[in-house]
Image 1: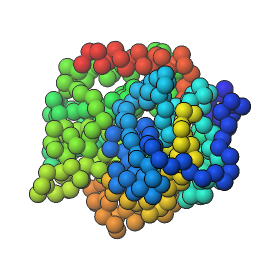
Image 2: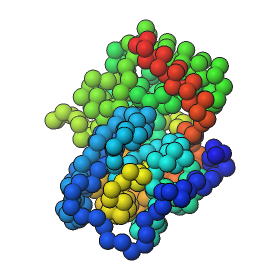
Image 3: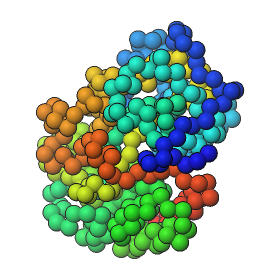
Amino acid sequence: MPLTRTDSPGALPLHDDIPQVADGLSPESGGVLKILNYPEYVSPDVLKAFGKTHGVEVEVTTFNTMEDAISKLRTPGASFDVWFPTPDVIGKAAVGKLLRPLNKTYLGNLANAWPQLQSPFYDEGSRYSVPYCAYTSGVGYRADEVTAGFGYGLLWDPAYKGKAYLIDDHREGLALAMLKNGSREINTEDPVKIKQAGTWLSELVPLMNIKTGIAAYQLVAEGQATVHHCWSGDMINAQSYLPKGVDADVLGYWYPSDDLGVVGTDSIAVPASATKPVLAHLLLNHLLDPAVAQENFSFTGYQPALSAITPEKMVTDEFVTEGLKSAIVTPEVYARSQQIFQISPAAEAVWLDTWSQFKAGQ
């Protein structure tokens, strides 16, 4: 299957043995609706209310990386009804028969999404996914400790040794090293360039005693991290984790002013193993409702990729402070910035191996 790109979109393959659900079916009731997601990435109150409405319990199984998620999906006997994948894995998940194609007659709220995400380049026609949240990848920091030198170089500044973190993700981490050193080839398949990024990252081990993680929202808020390579939503969410009496002005987020950093969206899909596929469709549609999305945003800090959730609304409704306006993503920023694309399996193996070598040296 050709790899999709923003300038070369593509529809993902369908499989005769994994049909979409038929039109007009009643949702399954009773038992458990099983969700596979990152930690703290959907509001428990939203899920509880949805479950109560439809007479089911909602169970969330978490993962920290997409590799972990796919491993869970492939575990013999495992079944999940809803999964939150990143665009770079949707194609291979579809090819690998891990996803059920969507029936859009159940997804009227897809029209609420940003126009370019109603039929995105990575899943033309939204055959397998709907958009969830938009984010950029930048540097979260404690504004009461960091006052100069803003940029990727903060993570190489010895002043923050022992309190610096990278996102625990092989593509994000190595892309950061490339961008910091002037390379924008964040989807390269050249082993030399990939390994060079690994060498740059390895500088951080003795220089910074660098750590990896995906809990910037907590670590920066509590002061355990002074600088943290992170997703923009983590810094918005960090406001909820500040100790009592600490003002949100201590939180900052840097993203390149030219918008040539990393941007992305997460998605929601229905795994092929789903035992409640109709109800799963209804949950996808529910999360695309602006009122529900806003409630969910208040918990996750991650901006819904919906036209109704505007930058002005985020500021007016006090989701975002003055110091965190750079964490807001607009459709224009999304269009201008760089995305992490799906790459060939051979190249993916080099990226993973290079990242593993870096982590082994920590």
